[in-house]
Length: 129
Image (cartoon, rainbow, N blue to C red; front, side, top):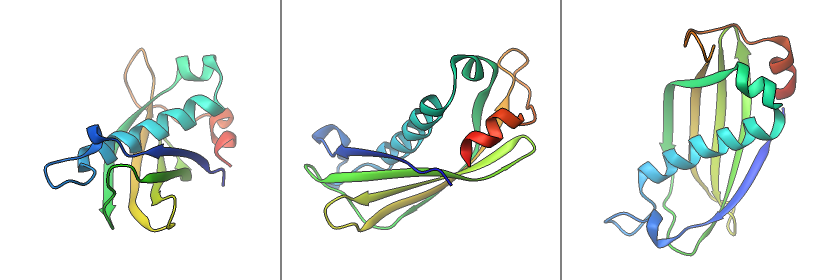
């Protein structure tokens, strides 16, 4: 399993009315790291021929993050089958290693022209190992 990682520092713009990171911001980070991972391991041709769309997000909020805290994001794909894949994103406090958020997203591979689901080709399956 290939793990892709990223570090961020929580900014004032990430904070909601309760003075912690807004739930929507976590969702944005979940989608952003998935995109970064995808672009880091694929060719231009693979990206032009394949587009991932979200079918389902499940997000467990375990603890809060606050302005100035350093966070550590990790993502990996646990399953690829047919036209779908399951991607996990874990978000930790980088200093304490406390798990803040864990998500599981079901993605569907689509053809960019027809917008229809397409079977995950072998060259894509192998890059997630």
